[in-house]
Length: 88
Image 1 (cartoon, one colour):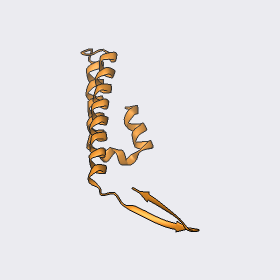
Image 2 (cartoon, rainbow, N blue to C red):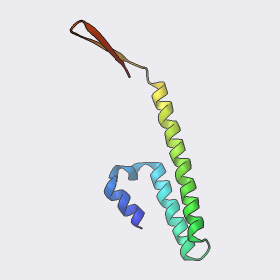
Image 3 (cartoon, rainbow, N blue to C red):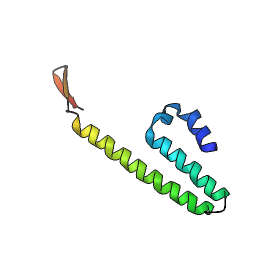
Image 4 (cartoon, helix red, strand yellow):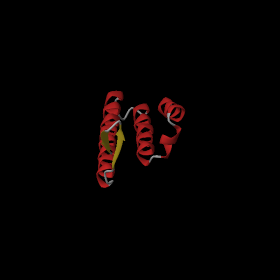
């Protein structure tokens, strides 16, 4: 499947992510159903896009939770009598 090839070429580390593996397996499953005439190509693409949106939302939620749990750090420096601080 060209999706797997493109992903392996562009982002080889992504294949270790469980969400990416699920997405690719679902793409294979839908492809087989289309080939057997059980599902239209359009329905398969819609189903795969819905899965992508759900997985992306979950990943975004996880990232936000990780950022929220990290304490903020403030670093200040002085240059020519002026103090500048950055909080991350």
